[in-house]
Image (cartoon, rainbow, N blue to C red):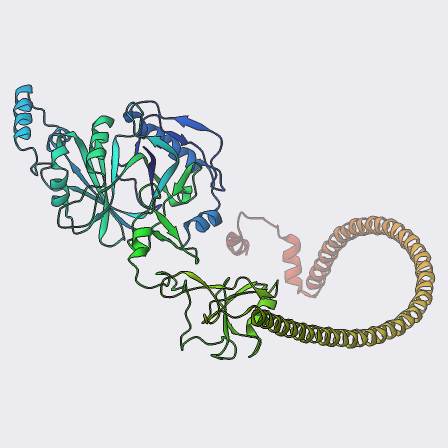
Length: 580
């Protein structure tokens, strides 16, 4: 017997961290190390041949590799579809001895032996863990992939030491689950219970000490009922790998060599054809065979598509609401009236080219391409057998049969010829109408084109006249510009000469100004000297005149007197008084 290994991938939201001790990879399991942006892995494979302790390291390297690569957001959104990231709770149940060792408590050998004896005494009872379990809540999507390669259940072949218990009913509490697996509790390292948005069920990851113990558990519990009062059975699969990837790292992209398992819309369990038969109906929806057999209606549980349509009072033509001579398209389910009513079923064929149509009531299939019934056998409603269509009356004679066949053939031929004539007449009329409309449209276009050509020709003539005028103006402007250039050149030369003369005259003026300043300073000094001399002469004349006008005594005294110059002006009056 062969089975398929399962790969669990947790698509985690970017803002959440990876759950503790969640990732796992079985020995000798071939995985794709790198994936391209389109979701197809590259041709690089590695074999997980080391121990289970090295799996976290390889997972970290793979995570770093995925982070370094850029994925197309459109591909991620396309593969993710309508699925949204939801809350996931991971509840971890560990053995009592392992929980004690993780806390750092060390026991002696005798204590461990005593504890093992006590555990063997309590075998089959609920003594699996102590204290509260570890519960982690993250946000993401849990993808379940099935390996395309089958693995044999024979001994000596490496599979996995981790088993997943799928679709555990929610009415089975944790205590009940532990009681269910109690006979094997000494072989279990830990149990992780994963709950998502799926109602009334959860899954459990059970990790054993080695593969032999996992094989024994699989052979014992797979397909076994949880209890004798319930119908639910235990579904077990081998888990080859458990990995955690961020949404931005392409976690929703497909993997080469793996197929993601869909959910059954009825029981909400994963569909695996190796476990139970999968049935796909006409509307392309898949279900478990047992789930679909419990569905009492003939319609699809998802889209309500009727697999075997029956004539009811609610059936009407979708175009004219007619209830007579109805035909349903076997391709898309369109309901229309026949050719003898509104001919909407045939018009639907002309638009969509859907060839086959089923007549409601008789269940005869008409082929529009061959313009005939596909078969003349219908299904009997009572026993489901195929019977010949028509009234089952007594046997007719050979001549009557021949006459009836001839009459039927003549009627069918006449009817078909009439239909062909009407069809081709309608087609010719339609073609003529379309041709007349096209001719009319072309005539209008030609008129508009001629008017546009005339307008453009007139505009071209005006443009040519304007061009000639502009050319004349251009020649005149060019001649004027030449004259102005020559005049400008002369003006520049004259300006240069004037500037040179200006420089010379400026130098001469500066020299004259310097000479004038020197002359002015010289004249000013001479004038000041002359003024002093004039002042002295005026004082002399005034003194002589004063002496001449003075009395004789005064003149004699002045002649006989002596002039003494004192040290200060204050002493002069005293000397004068003394002299007097």
